[in-house]
Image (cartoon, rainbow, N blue to C red; front, side):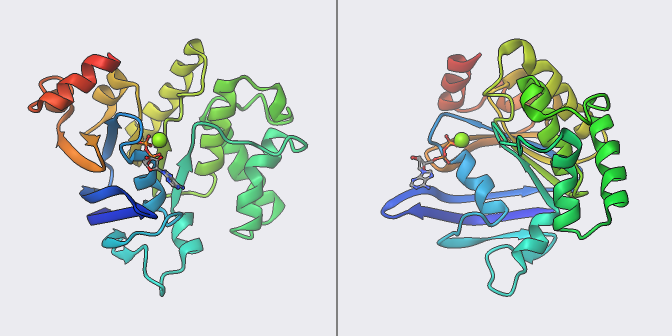
Length: 240
Ligand SMILES: Nc1ncnc2c1ncn2[C@@H]1O[C@H](COP(=O)(O)OP(=O)(O)O)[C@@H](O)[C@H]1O
Ligand SMILES: [Mg+2]
């Protein structure tokens, strides 16, 4: 469970998160939508401790992310994250790229890491690309590799930050399908996305961010289907 409680985050004088509270329960899929600069990416970075916070708290499985006594490396192992783009190591094969973290971070043997990597690559539909170099993959395949790479660490949570935004339109579907499958398998997910229909489909709850605050949150049928706030409706009109 992820518990975000009254979080404030500034970059210098610029406060970009202004008191966000949000709880993501085990097995839940929460989508974050909102305009550019509203603080969506920053919040994800705060959740896995890549960014500090000035006020409030974030707990993952009861553990305070921003406490000096927390072993961040350990905590991050249970939180997979997929960005718009992941630059794989070009001189390593797809399989080797996915094996890397289980080998280096978890200290698994080559055989163990390989077995896990193969399983996860098959899971995202890349079972026939094991020996290929990343440069030979399409954008959609690269994103699926990035998902496999995160899953290879056996995370309890997955964060997605506009995982399909850099893709050509015809490649978006295959990545969303992979994410949908993951959601159906019960993964706890927080996804920042501009794919409103997808968010409506897979999410248990949708949060609309505005000016560093959760402006509206609720079931997708409400926030997307029947927004209660004018700003939510305006945003949806601009992206749908
Ligand atoms: N590392 C940083 N240093 C300074 N300002 C930042 C940094 N990262 C993000 N910001 C600013 O914080 C605000 C929120 O950014 P971001 O979280 O990326 O928004 P979103 O993902 O919703 O588009 C923006 O004004 C952005 O310019
Ligand atoms: Mg962003």
